[in-house]
Image (cartoon, rainbow, N blue to C red; front, top):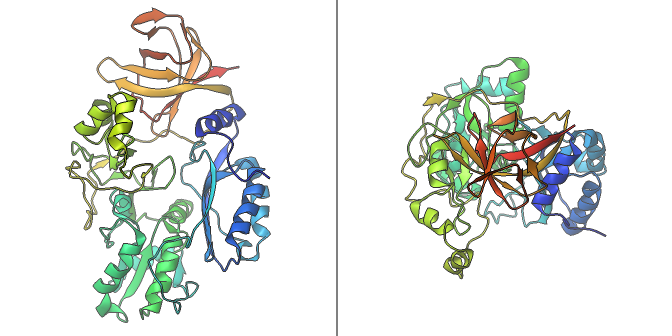
Length: 452
C-alpha cells in the first residue's frame, strides 16, 4: 500500500498544470474521540490519494484538522470519504475566498498528540463543551454591544495584516501562549461581559471557547467557521465587513484579501503592504512582510546578512548552518531586530492604503498550458523579467502565460529574449532567460507556454 508521496512538489505542480482542471482550496476540522489515529491516518491517505487530494492534515485522539486542495470534479467523492465517519457526517467545508491550484502540492497527514497544541494537561477539561456559534450577521450585531469583548486567537503575524475592528490581538507566537494571557487579562469580566472570539477557520476558537467556559466565563461566543466563513457570508448577504485587511492562511498563498484595506507596512521600508514572504536564505526562512520594491532590491531576503549568504557557494551556505536548528520554519520566527516596521500587540483599526483590485487567480483554464519555469528577478527600471527554464524549451514566437496570486494571468507573445548576455531564438532547460515584460512580476510567478 502506498502511504506516502512519490512525487516532488515541482513534479506535482507540472502535473496539475498539465491536467488543466479547476482545484478547490478548503479546510475543515472536527473534535472527536479517535481510538486509533494511526489507522485513521492511513485510511484517509489511501482514500484521498485516489482522488488527487492534496493538503496538510493533522489527526490525533481529539480529532482532525485539515487544509486541502482537491479537484473540483472530485468534491462529492471527497465528501463521501468523510461521511464514512459518524463524527464527520454533514461536516462544514470552508472553501477559500481565493482559490489557487498550487495552494498545496503534497498530501501530508501527520499523527499528533493534539490537533491544536494548547499546553493544557487538565483531564477535567472537556473540549466539546463549547461556546455559542455565531453566524456573520449575529457576529456583527454582538460586536456593536458595548458589553462585548472580542479576542483574536491567532498569532501576531496573522493579526498584523487583518483583524476585526476593536479586537484584542495578543502579541503571541502560538495559540497556547494566548490562553493564559487572555484569561489573566479578563479575570474581572467572567460574568458581566460577552467574550467573543474568532480565528481563521474556527478550530482554535472551538477549543478556546471550551477552555474559557471551563475557566468560569458565563457568556462565551465564537465566530462559526472563522474568518473564512464570515467573508463568504457577508458577500452572500450584503453585510458590512467588520473585519479589515487580509486573512492570513497557512498554505502557499499566505493570505486572501477580505477588504481592500492595507493596515500593515513593509517591514523593511515602511511602505503600506500586507504581502508575506519567506527569507530566501535556507538557514533563515524568516516570515515577514515585504513590498515588491524591497523584494527586488533584497532578492527576497530579510536582511543584508541573508542577502550576502544566498550569493555564497552552496557548500559555504551549508557550512554556516551546520549544527544550527534550521529548516522550514515558515510560520515561526515572525520577529527579528531587522524588521524595523514590524507591529504586533495593539494594532490600528484604520487603513494605511487601499490595495489594487487583484486579478482573478481562480484558474479556470480553457486552454492547454505547460509549465516552463519560474520567475527569478524583475528589473523595475528596464521592465525586464528573468526566468529559469526548468521544463521543455522556450522559443521566439511562443505564446506564453505568466501567472501568480498578485500578477494574475498575463498572456503575451515572446518576440525577443536574452540568454547568457546574447540574443537567442531558443532557451533550453537550465537556461536563465530575460525578456521585456510590460507589467511587474513577482518571485512566486510561474512561466507557462500556451499550446493549442
